[in-house]
Image (cartoon, rainbow over all chains, first blue to last red; front, top):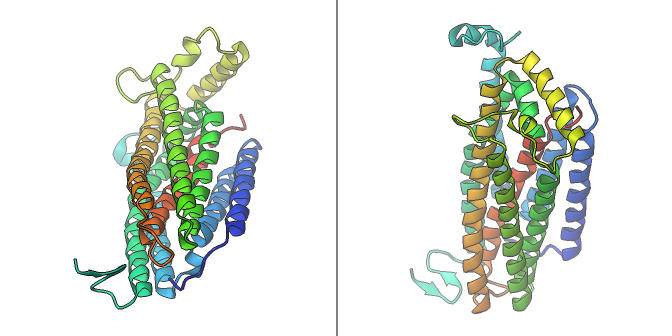
Length: 107
Length: 243
């Protein structure tokens, strides 16, 4: 690696940010925001994950080709989630009719 | 394999050797993202359909222990990152100390997980024939706070009104809870094994400022396992805390 040594001060700062965000996600869970609870929880988790990838895992200081692999991993995950969900979310009633659990699905 | 000092035969320079290792590690971690991704996908769909059961299941988890484990795991990521730094600047004893700290914190995480699993066994929340989502509400232990049991009973009756098949659907939640935290714990156990090896290598002086690839690569793995937990914690523990 293009010998970039991350100083301990940066690591400590990232650690403190992760702690603050953990407290924030717990606090937010106790407020009823309806459908936005999950949005906020996932947004905070994603900020935390990004901090870990960029600094603890040195992605920020890595060569472009390593960064490309990281972006690909996220992209493939997004493909799986988006395409699977687009199927389930748009065919709730078909699935309900086939699985005999009409009361639970789509209503 | 033919090796000249710290450089393996198939590489031109130490820098190339290290970049190749990091690239390979990230390709492996991409497969891990999709490996866990399948479970997250299953979780998303079932939570979408059986929200009431997932909320009730989530509220049976011990938030204090889960939160403590989150802090412990993020702290272990910090000590892991610090050992990478220490090996870069050639502080051998410090590298070893930080690796040991990481191992201790990882083991503490697994120990707390055992306590949590034991509680679920006691409360009949293991999916299977004897699963009973309202077992604790029906059979409170002497040291359970009465108002807490009352709140749980009220929450359960509301949930049963929404979803008569609550018991079956709560089993889905707990199957995913044990499947996802179990797979995560398995990764922690593998990581702990690799840490033991790293500590040994570090003590015999294998790592220098120019050669510390194993510390960095196992560090990448350790941080990845931390990221999985960063998502698991809100998704499993914090679904429906605002009752």
